[in-house]
Image (tube, rainbow, N blue to C red; front, side):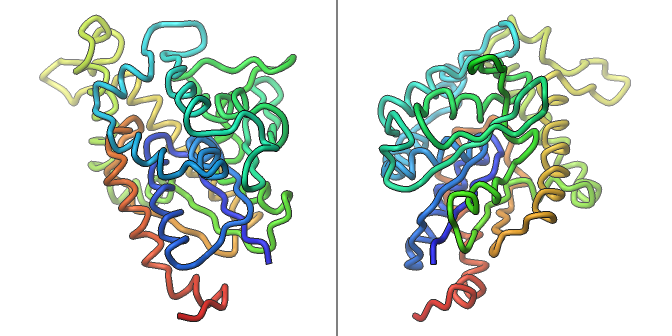
Amino acid sequence: MKIGLALGAGAARGWTHIGVIKALEKMGIEIDIVAGCSIGAYVGAAYASGHLLALEEWASSLTEWQVFALLGVGIRRGGLASGQKVFDKLMNDLCFESFEEMHKPFAAVATDLYSGREVVFNSGKIGDAIKASCAIPGLFSPVEHGSRYLVDGAVVNPVPVNLCRQLGADFVIAVNLSADFRPQVLEKCSVDHENIQRKTDDFFNSKVSVLRQWFSPDPKPEKKSTPGIMGVMSSSLEILQARVTRSRLAGDPPDILIEPHLRDVGLLEFHRAAELSQKGEESVLRLSEQIKYQLQLVD
């Protein structure tokens, strides 16, 4: 039986995937096939190349200032940041150059900006595939690929269970990073969500004063602060992604669904890798008995 692992989108929350993978391996589960969307594609590419521990070491060393520098923030056509240094790190140190070289079959998903079609990458060069899959609308510029412009795969397929099955998986374990951003959850935890939104705005505001006019909330004291551009963008994407994920998983459910608790983690808090990896391990432990039962594992 071939086991597939579908790693979902979620920006900084994606470091949770590292802990999920480590916990599954500790249980003796051998992953045969990997598919990823956005940050899930980034982590998945490193894992399928045999460099998960190197990724964890690098991610855990990042500070807020280093994250800001790596993002390459600046007003440019199609996005607010380039992220090129992040993708260069993957290709130079953490990943093979082509899909064919990987230790495990791997696929990544992106979205055609104009047709809205799902675009699957599972062969050829990896660089543009991962960059396209991670191209969060508004934050990163679309990636030109052939005659198309591609953006984040989370727009159409945030947790690519179907790609695992297309690659031959008989049993699929999926990791959904958007469970805490479903409408019914947000309604109960609106204050927490507002705080996350504000943290995303503050990430930029605290780093470069010249950007304050673009990203800072309305300072008027007589009324509730208005969210900044980044807060509006991130919150909208979270709601969209949660709804699309729910729809896709209902139509093509995985055999095991892992949903870490990430309500307190902002979109760009990439400096929290060690903590997020731990959250990933904890999410697997909560389901360990179910996983063992369904895979017929014996202690």
